[in-house]
Image (cartoon, rainbow, N blue to C red; front, side, top):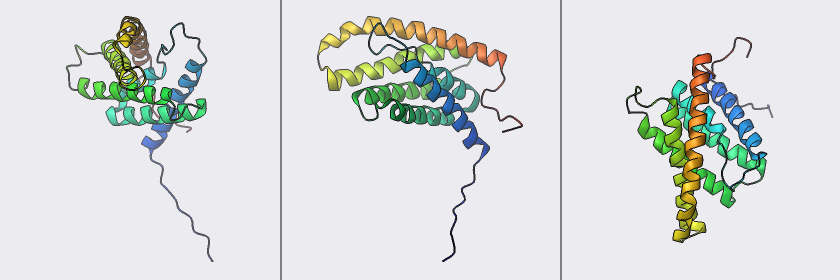
Length: 180
């Protein structure tokens, strides 16, 4: 019997998404090694990549990178389908929903810093909403809100400034190089 081969074409966009997702996954793994003074509070380093992808390649590419990062990161960290995975997924979904709304607003008022801050707030809101509905169904969870909101403001601002700097320094993070 002759050997059958299935050949799937790989588009430049597929390579770009894979490259950017790999960077986001690497940042997720690095961030997991960082100690956190408040459980659940992390700087969201992978969100830098996702915001860059949104600004340079659009919402569909950003959503693809976000989903790949979430799934691969949770598999590599051993948290796939754990409560932490679902909390991360709810935060990512809320952030992507926020980005899908914000992309239609005037760019002169909503640059990388404001987008990063608003999506950081959306991320933490999605996580707290799921935690309240599933893990801690009491109003006591509201006591955590100021700490998480402050973290979202700080990390959202820092990440937005990093994105602004990266955009100014490099025209396109996901561009294909000649030797790839």
